[in-house]
Image (cartoon, rainbow, N blue to C red; front, side, top):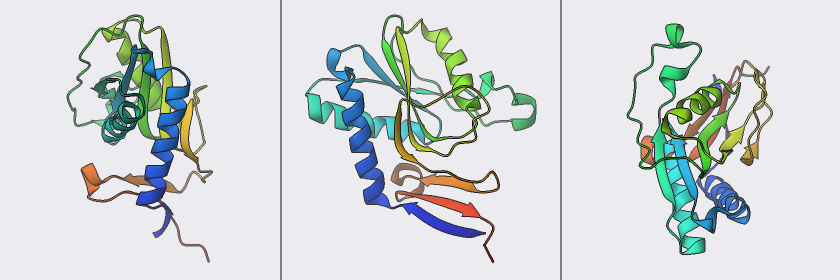
Length: 178
């Protein structure tokens, strides 16, 4: 499979800084915001966004992690390896920003929305993604996008992060074009 680098480490950093500014502009410094990273790579992305927000605002931002695997509609097929969910506070009345690496069909986000209900009733839920590749199967859209990346369904978008993979980049994997 051919691999094309779409974003290098610096492009990933710039996108996250920009997204954190956008989140801040919509009121993340009011003190009620909670960033919740979706497993696997949404978790370190949420931590980075939190770092930038705290750096810009001087205010503490709550951080959580969520594994929505048990709420997926394809659970019988997927057989996921579960990771811990850690949401350190009641979400009732708070502004929640779900953070994920790639938005594709929207099914992971739908599962995450179902899982959030177990932790309270947020006043607002927003979605931040590093890459939006299109091909939605559900009426879900991201509020904050690092990069819109139109792809074909036979391509795969892979996000590599230093916390998980040793370095930062976004690549598209697909059949080599003749």
